[in-house]
Length: 292
Length: 190
Image 1 (cartoon, rainbow over the protein chains, first blue to last red):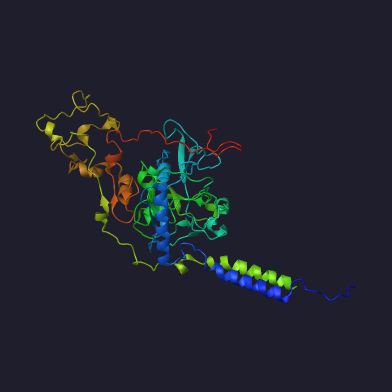
Image 2 (cartoon, rainbow over the protein chains, first blue to last red; image 1 turned 180 degrees about the vertical axis):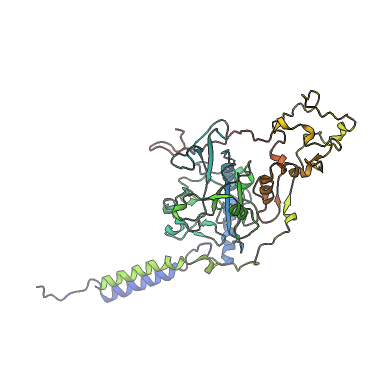
């Protein structure tokens, strides 16, 4: 048996200094940068002004960055008429222009799938790369997808830095300054709705939309995840999203779920409505319906 | 033993920070709640309809038709309106079933009641009642403007040619680039 007295590997002094360092570190984390939802109004104003200066200099024209909060009593929802969509992709490019998505490498928040009528809504058979001379093609229908703005979003739960959350009006948002680019959220999203900036995003100066929002279409850096925000910069100012306004067949509908007179409530109450991957219990606020 | 305690302490300090930061957004909202509900306009003020899409110089119809005798026979139009091809239930319909012979600048319903071009949706709704109902609710047709305020509707005829109401096929915008196969430049067409 070993009769030598046990000498501790850490002595009292070392332990005390370690504990003090840990306590100081813990306190210091409280002094660091904060997510948009946590900063004071004064600090937010400073942040936004700084961004405006940075983007205006980069793109050579005045860029505004809004920090508009959710409107109380509003929960946004979207509906898309599958019986009308002709797959023309006008929405895809209106979204790119409105939301300052990178042109190269290409980022598209909206993806339109061509499906065969004989097979129904089946993503294993769907083709997003269809390119006929004219749409709609005989025997096909089209299912545009984007962020489904789930009420039970798997993406926000996996974020290790709390960079993505659901705002009070139901929009799932990302704070690009907090995103570390781990892409856990992309793996968690069952709809493929989140997109990663693999390269430095490029937007031609003359095509930059200068009307931006902190949590929406402000220019993103390389290495962060982005996605549809229901055009937060437009909808929080009372306007329709860009894709709704551009759709040539009027297939896209948008409104306040809490307003009984809204278009969205009319659709849910009177039409055949479905959500994608209902069995996953994500509870999307993006509804598909058949008006005819 | 002591090293284990120190380790646990450091770990606890490490995890405490993100936990504290993950509180609900509502609890920490920096801006006080604004007015209770968004302002709401009365229904009629929330809607705006553009003028009917007449071909240039075609309206008022009475400018030409005022002195002309009324001819109700189905015939090939050779002198004027040769651009109009009727494929809207053509077997059962001819010009004066919708256009009014007595007042050329108006349309009329099946009952004979006159209706202006600005309200042509009432005429369309005689057959397409469920579309008219959806249009009034904001569900059929395109809306622009404000989701909670001033909405711009379109007349049926702004999208559908009344004489050939079915939409024509259009060219789609370019397909997205395919993801790069391993070892190739991104965006290459396969």
